[in-house]
Length: 403
Ligand SMILES: CC(C)(COP(=O)(O)OP(=O)(O)OC[C@H]1O[C@@H](n2cnc3c(N)ncnc32)[C@H](O)[C@@H]1OP(=O)(O)O)[C@@H](O)C(=O)NCCC(=O)NCCS
Image (cartoon, rainbow, N blue to C red; front, side, top):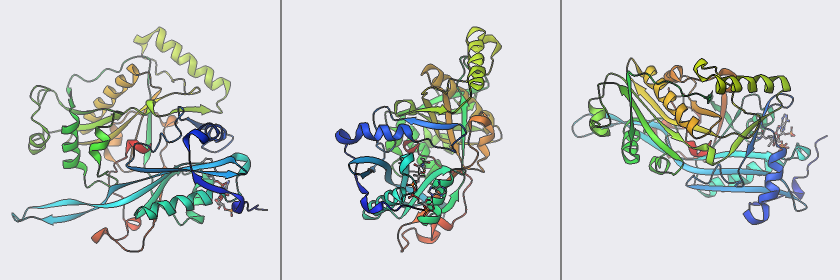
């Protein structure tokens, strides 16, 4: 029988000095993923707000019973693209312009294993949504694994969320050897201001594009934005700037940015058998001892490891996959120099560029599930109407601040 303790549960704002250690203790007991299989643990490196603190507006709440912390939730709000409109200028040139909305995101919801099914998760979500509404958010969304039944049911059956998008998280291990990048591709690092112009010009109508992209690109965790072009077309010396480049681009190109998630939190895979750990270790020893063999070594994911996240992925032209692959190889080498365990990215389920992204199926998640809820009754998003009912686009812009 379900015990309703929600009356004795106090939900209040997280206070760093008072709560930090107790929150970390709860976090350590909370696996994410189906029990009795491999599960993922997060080490917040002493900063429980780390996964939201780079967003323009954020909040963390804790749930307490008799002064004992039994659960927590994080949330943030920002302005993103939810659709596009056709605009006709005086010169009668039509172009797409973005429609923006204020979007809230729920993440890092945890309830102590021995306090579950008592209504605490639900109470935390409701309190967070009240804060979202007070701060003008029009939609709230959350991401979970399709198999995480507790989380899917909580949001869809109890909180009114609907299944919205199913992007894929693609993860590639970082080997002990460098990856060779094709000589036929030139990689040009862009300055943050060029990257902002580029992204606004090309991606502002992409779903979930953050209106404050300048804050993302200029954040100290953003390690750089890189453009791949066919060798001989442009070089660092002949780079004409984003506007002129986009007026006359080469036949193919691709772009991406690298985010240093390693400084924010670490992950750890638990539940692997000793045999699996042993096999993984053997591949690493081989790769280190005989690097010329280029053994695809499995990184040590069974101890806390950091990663880089690739965001702002885009490209065009018949060789765009080749350009994307070269950028990913470049990013791999950067991650290797920084001591990361893996490189990860997240793309829309029908993103054509995904075929250029090297990844291991066993480390990736083909169907991450994003659920959404409309928080207000009236529409400020113009002709698109209710975003929750809209068809998915080919691409999405995954904000690295909320990974
Ligand atoms: C998901 C989680 C936060 C739920 O917390 P909780 O306090 O147990 O949830 P509640 O008691 O408020 O449950 C509310 C509803 O959610 C659903 N639910 C919760 N746990 C469930 C489970 N194990 N199986 C099926 N449905 C479940 C039910 O519909 C439940 O209502 P009911 O008890 O009347 O049937 C908790 O299981 C948890 O911390 N899991 C590990 C971390 C995680 O996966 N977080 C979510 C990432 S987005």
